[in-house]
Image 1 (tube, one colour):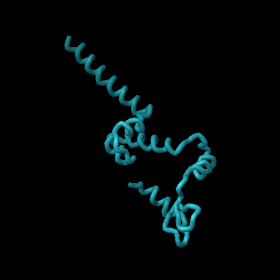
Image 2 (tube, one colour):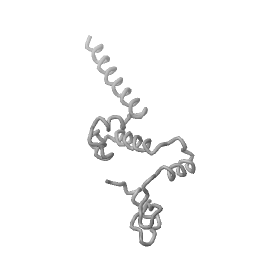
Image 3 (cartoon, helix red, strand yellow):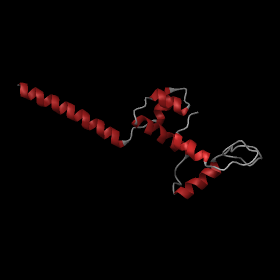
Length: 120
């Protein structure tokens, strides 16, 4: 799994517990966290995002990647999907890129129509 530099930097700032090789530790000595539900509820509450699910973060990640120009194959690899259909359900275009696309297409069609009128 790949992590961005800012995520790695954040994880490096978490103090390590002696004798535990894991950054995000579990309740058992030397163990790692196995259930995110309770910590995620605390994180959401503190951040004022109580209606955000962990799954929503994957959707946002995929949509941001799509907006940045990554294709569905790459996004699927980043999310660990084997099936492109799964990735297509995750990656949603945001309103702004759709509006930019509509404006660009509109301009192209308008220019073509204007050029046709000039030739007539």
